[in-house]
Image (cartoon, rainbow, N blue to C red):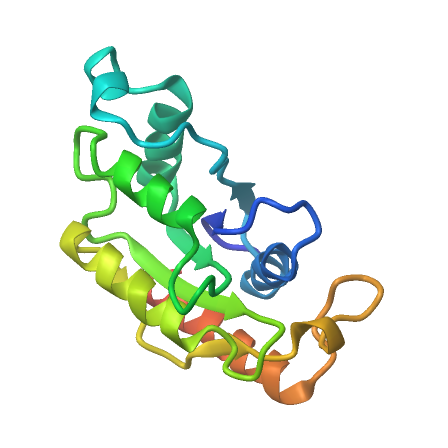
Length: 179
């Protein structure tokens, strides 16, 4: 049964990245009334640019976060950390007035070609989100390893263990959002 609206943030800009597929699969499992993919194609954070006014696309992203019943943050692991794309978006949104992340239900997931599934990137995502005081769902951890082997031709997860883990995480996110 569809419920609530879900915002997805993908720390990989590539249209068919494993993390974008994982984000969309999470949305399918969450089964929201509405799913919106946030735009993270933002200028690099720059205090001089901010002094001229917060860019429109950053303001829109902040409004999307504020309006969402829940947020799914999905990102790759780049050099043992979260992606610069995601970090930049978090930095920009921190400048949007109103504390849009405060008490927002958030789930984190990651996909990598390697064997760890993005464990370090998830840890750094949590550290970067913590100052904003969202309600981060603590588990189960969705760490998709060997992602190139884990999606079918429709972008759906093939492995029962991963599918069950992700479904449980999305159910926990719904519960955190009161849906």
